[in-house]
Structures are given as structure tokens and as C-alpha cells.
Image 1 (cartoon, helix red, strand yellow):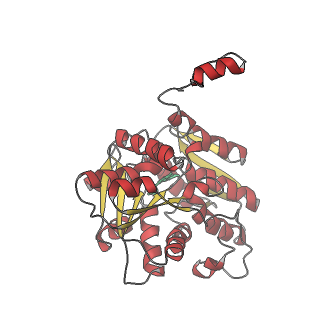
Image 2 (cartoon, helix red, strand yellow):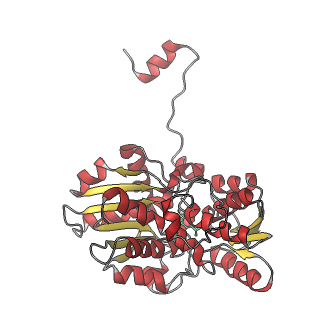
Image 3 (tube, protein in one colour):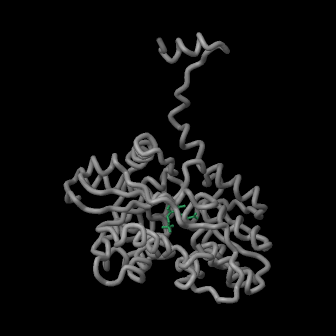
Amino acid sequence: MIDSPYRQHLPVPASAPAVTLHEGNTPLLHSAYLSDVTRCDVWLKVEGANPTGSFKDRGMTVALTHAAADGAELVLCASTGNTSASAAAYAARAGIAAAVLIPEAGVAKGKLGQAVRYGARIVEIAGGFDDCLRIARDLAAHHPVALVNSVGNELRLAGQRTVAYEIVDVLGAAPDLHCLPVGNGGNITATWQGYRAYAGPSGLPRIWGFQASGADPFVRGEAVARPRTEASAIRVGSPATWEPALAARDESGGLIGSVTDDEIFQAYGLIARHDGVFAEPASAAGVAGLLKQHRAGAVPPGLRIVITLSGNGLKDPDASLRDGLASVHAGPESGSVARELGLR
Ligand code: F0G
């Protein structure tokens, strides 16, 4: 992405060598299933196809290109898992050490495994994501480290805007409506800013963001002290990007709503089964939200809709097997397997 024509839209010095894993240019898939259900034209932006499996790579390539050009010795972030996986990978690529602060027992196994293998120093904090971010900001204020959370690093959001550029280029225009999951507020902010910068003032989409109902500070209008949701990526109670996220909602004439964990997990299953796209639970919040609004009669037919699927389902194997493994057992002969499969 940073080595693509979009580079001219990114705040990177022309002379800086790109720290890249060839992020971006992710599939925009038409969803026959969701189009049929909603009587709309629904597209899925599959951000799990990025090199570390989430949309975070779009911002991290920009942040690490700068960090490398500045001679940074240590990059630091707080994370519910995806930012840490991405920071660790791009730091490894740049030859810079990385340290990640994560909530104790709050990160999906696949993401943790990524941080381990990319060689990051991992600090599990006895607290939630909000504690991790508070500490990361404090450390960055007093020590020579490059903070690569989107707060304190506008470069991240600048990179994340490219998702909107790609959608406009593929569809030929912005959609009528864009649905996405909301945690810390960076994704909704960057997506809206991307459309505004690239699609021009006419034909901008409404932005509908969705939070888990146990972790929905934007919906309540205040921080949630103990955010709860099985969708661990968006278990954020005190979002750092507050005003710009609300601006994205209000300027676009959109909304930020909540969906229950049951609705999230139902949507998570539906897009895998009907569209063949395995996205992590938090990623399905946008799908759950669209279906909920549709049931409430708030989605007029005929709209062109894009939904961001923010991360790859492989990151969270526990979530995928939470209802058990629906398998049968057979002896090591084809006859036995044929019987189990009911083959005649
Ligand atoms: N979807 C996924 C898969 C995420 O990992 C995140 C955020 C979001 C959606 C929400 O985006 O925070 O910009 O509103 N993950 C952060 C992290 C918090 O640390 O990886 P947001």
C-alpha cells in the first residue's frame, strides 16, 4: 500500500524507505446472502486479508516507516491484540525492537502467538485495555520510545484512511452506507476522513458504527468502567479517539449503536457459512448491526452498502470452537466414513 499510488496521499517523506509487508488492496466481495436479506447491494471489505490479518497493518506501515526514518530504538503500543500483532511484525521488518502492553487473559490466542513469533517483548497488565493505553502514553511521555497507538500517532489514522480510497476506486464511488465495528474509535474516524479526502463532498456515505452492548461508551455517552464482551478486540471502555469518532457519526448523518454478543456471534457464523468469509467475532459487529437495523425497518431497499470485516477469524480459535467441535468419528476405512456421511 505504501509502495502503491496511494503513497502520494500518505504523510511519508519521499526519501524514506517503505517498511511494508504489502498491506492493503484487500478483497471487496459482493455478499449475495446479505444483499438478499436486506434487498440492498452489500459488499464486504475483507481486512483480514492483510499481512498480519487485520486492518491495523494499513496504519502500521506508515508509523513504522516514520519510526525507522527517525532512528527509533523501541516501538511501544497498548492493544487488545491486533495492534500488537501488527506493531510486532512491522517492527521486526524494520529491525526495531517492539514492546506490547496487553490485558491479562484478554487477548485471543492467535494474536498472542503472532506477537511471540515476531519477537516482541510482551507485558501482560493486570487490568484492561484502558489501563494498558494509559500506561503506554505515560511511558511515551517520559522515555525515548515511539508510541504506535493511533492516539499520539496521527500517522496510523492516515494509513487507515486508505481503506476508503480502495473502496471508492473499486466501486467507482463511495457507497450510500458504510458499517463497521467500533472500539477505541480510530477505525470509524479514519474511514470517514478517508472518504472525505478521496470521494469529494458529494456522495459521501453515512457511517454506521457498532459496539458490543457491554462495551459501548459511545452509545452511553460516557466511559464504561468494566467493559464486557466476548469480542475481545473491541473490549474498550474509555476510547482514546472520542471527538473525531463522534464527528464521523454526526457529519455523515450516521449512528453508533450497540449489538449484543449473541447478535455478534450469530453474524460471525452467518458470513462464514453463507459467504465463505471467516472474520473474527469483533469484525462481525458491523454485520450484526446492519441486520439489527434492517429488522427495525431502518434500512431502505436499494442502498449500496459496504461492511468492514476488520480482522481474520483464524486469530481467535477459541471463539470458533466455543460451541464445540461438531464432528463424528469413524474407523480408518472408507466404508466406515461412507456410513457416517450417509453416502449410498
Ligand atoms: N475490529 C478489530 C478486529 C479490532 O482489533 C479493533 C480494534 C476494532 C475493530 C475497532 O477499531 O479501535 O479503531 O475503533 N483493536 C484495537 C487493538 C483496540 O488494540 O488491536 P478501533
